[in-house]
Image 1 (cartoon, one colour):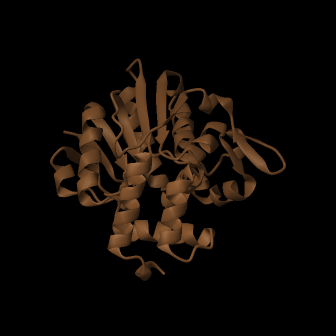
Image 2 (spheres, rainbow, N blue to C red):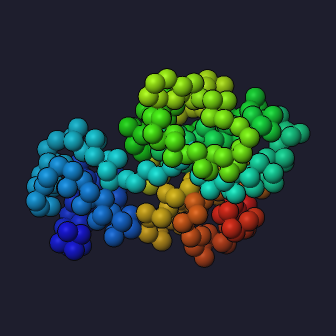
Length: 271
């Protein structure tokens, strides 16, 4: 079905969303965005781009509810454990003698990464001095992140990376369990501020020691990647750390403003 969506149809839809709702998807990677559109059309049993275009233009709530389908929110607890081990052992010790630590999770999705960081910070006895900002374009994903509530089926999927990081601990150390759900303990939630934010065109005036943006930029074209990386560079304090996803490729323009701290785990330092 993806082959049936022409570039002209895609551009028309993107322009309509920009004009109507001031959300700009024009620099999203085309094949990925077409797959997202196909997923949305199949979900609502739509036969044509015209049908989708018409529904989006006349039904604002439909469009807002569809953002999750247009964006791919992929996250999990302790995703890529070796990255968290590197952060725990090599990055966080820098802050033992500092009075505060400020972290931005850009594109936090449903919050698992935010709470992973909180758990790691507690282990390093830094949780009391941290302020975490967690942002995402999706209001639905943010609502889940704010609640910190996850189904037991989802939590079961996180057990392998969790045990790779904490082989001798249990999820009960960090979550309160009920019959169907687990809720992150308040200890980890109270240090987080959540905000709806669009990386494409919203500014950020705060300054951070560490910025996470993992597996978000894979959906951006080269120009948008560079634009976002320049914003991260501006938002990082001198010597600040940027953590990107395992599937994110640092473009050449990004290498001019960031030094590789550890290529394997995609950790960079501001030049």
